[in-house]
Amino acid sequence: MSDTPPDHLSTNPKSPHFDMEVLQRGIGIRFKGRERKDVEEYSISEGWIRVAAGKSRDRHGNPLTIKLSGEVEAWFENLAEGAQDAAAADKPADAE
Image 1 (cartoon, helix red, strand yellow):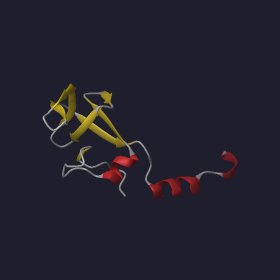
Image 2 (spheres, rainbow, N blue to C red):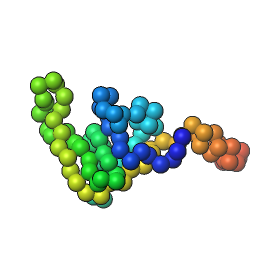
Image 3 (cartoon, rainbow, N blue to C red):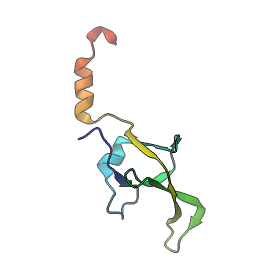
Image 4 (cartoon, helix red, strand yellow):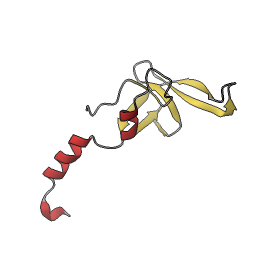
């Protein structure tokens, strides 16, 4: 698995941009220079994020979202499984 997060990702299982394996690794988002934890969907190339609009819900019970435009950066919060094994192999035995 790559160390670069996908360009477009959603937390909604009904979305075509939903990917459980990527979400389980943890995604960090920085929007306009500020780290955000409430992002439901993002697109790096198009420069936008979607966040919940308060406690409002639509008629299906899903949160209403708003689209905010600006600079988006994304990163993985956890290393990939193969990268963890390689990092453990590179670590000296006396470092523990």
